[in-house]
Amino acid sequence: MTAWMLVLPIVLPLVTALITAVLRHRPGYARVMAVAGTGMLLAAGIGLVMRVWHSGPIAVQVGSWEAPFGITLVADLLAAVMVLVTAVTGLAVSVYALGTIDAARERFGYHPLFHVLLMGVCGAFLAGDLFNLYVWFEVMLIASFALLVLGNDREQVRGAVPYVVMSIVSSASFLAGIGLLYGLTGTLNLADLAIKLPTVSGGLVTAVAMLFLVAFGIKAAAFPLFFWLPASYHTPPVAVAAVFAGLLTKVGVYALLRTFSLLFVQDVPFTHGILLAMAALTMLSGVLGAAAQKDIRRILSFHIVSQIGYMLMGLALFTPLALMGAVFYVVHHIIVKANLFLIGGVVAQLGGSFDLDHLGGLYRRYPWLAVLFLVPALSLAGLPPLSGFWAKLILIQAGLDAQAYVIVGVALAVGLLTLYSMTKIWVGAFWKVQPAVPADVTSPRPAAVTMLLPIAMLAALTLAIGLYAEPLVLVATRAADGLLEPTPYLDAVLGGAP
Image (cartoon, rainbow, N blue to C red; front, side, top):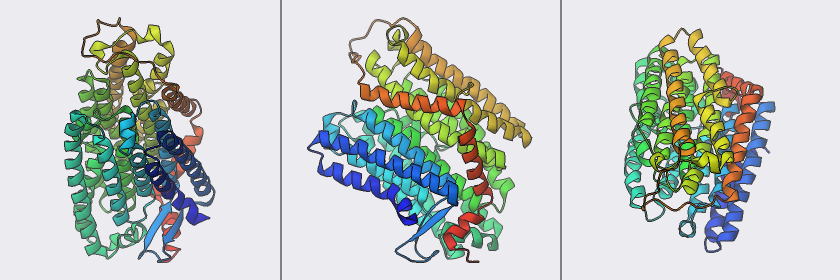
């Protein structure tokens, strides 16, 4: 049973991808299967979280090769929660895509590629060794690149160039770090590395840690390695941009959380001090970039960058409360950011444009859409009683406890500037009178029910977390404890061997 619980989050998207590929010329059946596949993934994610919550970390050795020699799949509470929130996002986006992805993209493989992407994300969360983490990163890269350029839009191709170039740089840095770690320790199993790295010279380990910081920093879109994201994420269809915004950078954040709590802790003042500086600069550069934009997708893309800074802040402070805040923030942000992109797509469809200069009057015509926008927008800014308020409050408290007053001041200022950006979207799209529509602006079209249902679902989830935050706080606390005290993780992988 343990083996199946760990394998299902990878096998289900793979099987769904194969079935939808076979059905690509029968789009009706392919759509039903695509939604059903994400629904089954959600059920598997719920089962995995429940099992890990009650039993602690679980692991399986693929092919019966004992760790650290074989391929290990392992789930502690952090990994299980990440699989679950991946499934939630995948289900919401797959339903939304029913009303937005055109027939041409479906024929050219949108549904199989989408599920291969989900498989890569889940595989990365469950990987128990660095080489297989690299493999799952590459699966994600291939699927995401294909989704990014799917269609005949030249803007998509231009947006894909920086994305692919920086992904190659990230992969090269990752692979170089893997080779050096294997040369130093003779292993790539994460649990085995956690035991062997303390016996290696601290200077060498710190030098290798910088390679991983570059590799994962690019994946996470952290300063100064973030510029590819706002150049790319505004170009694909909204359904693709939403899953990118919600999940892809969080795989980089997850990799940083895992490696810089389990492996690279020999010189915490140095390595995590760099992370703290990166966190502050990531927040500032992202939010200032957003303030200068007028396109909804570009504003939201820059805000992905700024919010990554809060997650890095929690890792950099490296206290139980800070790590708990980082985990809480990751979950909150995946839900909120994916939903904002989905709402942006509805705004563009009803208003005919993503440009705020060409929008207006939506509040009077669609008050329900204004409410659906305000929930994730105000949550992103950190207003009570929404989920973002608790996420920011926990991190601010952790910063004050650690006497890290500079990063606390930056975090508070960025929160105010985030509110400014969300207000700019509100005024531009919903409140002001709609200007005369230029000839080159797309004619407005009604929004399909399949577009509104996932938005309402994610907004309700954001409200639920905000109004009743205790369950997620408990989960995040236990996940953070597992990062700081990894003995159960090591025992699950190595079977209690010394």
